[in-house]
Amino acid sequence: MNGNERNLTGRIFLNASQSHAGSVTYEEETEKYVALKRRSPYQILVVSDDPDNCMALTVILEREGWNTLCTSRVSECRELLSLNRFDLAFCDRRLRDGSYLDVLAITHTLKYHLPLVVTSRQADWDQYLEALRHGAFELIVSPPQGSDVLWALTQADRRHYLKE
Image 1 (tube, rainbow, N blue to C red):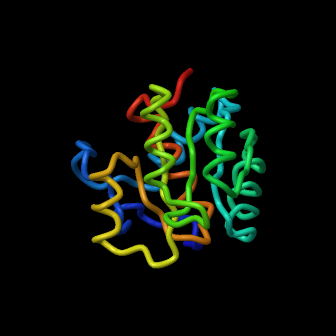
Image 2: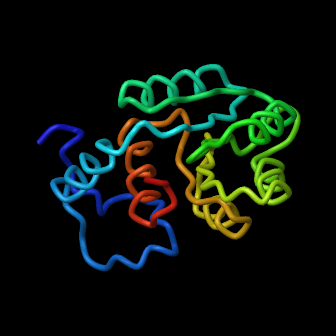
């Protein structure tokens, strides 16, 4: 079994609102992902002031056929969200001019339901719970692994956050 073919029940950061009980196999997740990909492309916003994180997310998402737009500032994020419709966003926990909390505040101000995946270099359980309490959809470690990004997309689709 290679690194991609592992049982996905070993994830540290399972969304607390997930009601799916029991183990999820790689084959089940792959089947869901293939169904998700058929409905693509989604519009995905990446908010990151780390060029490596932005590049990694953009490469992973665009390789899979999704459209991405990357910004490094909260002020630019506000403008992009007011002018465009996004299906999902990835945002660094901390930015030079703010944090993911500012991005969440913008979405609330605009009355814009946008699942937000927080990325953090020092992701731990406390940060994960904090992000969920503030309204984030998920938290993943950065720089992101392709499997974590695709898992987050699959979970967003499973919970019907992504439009068809």
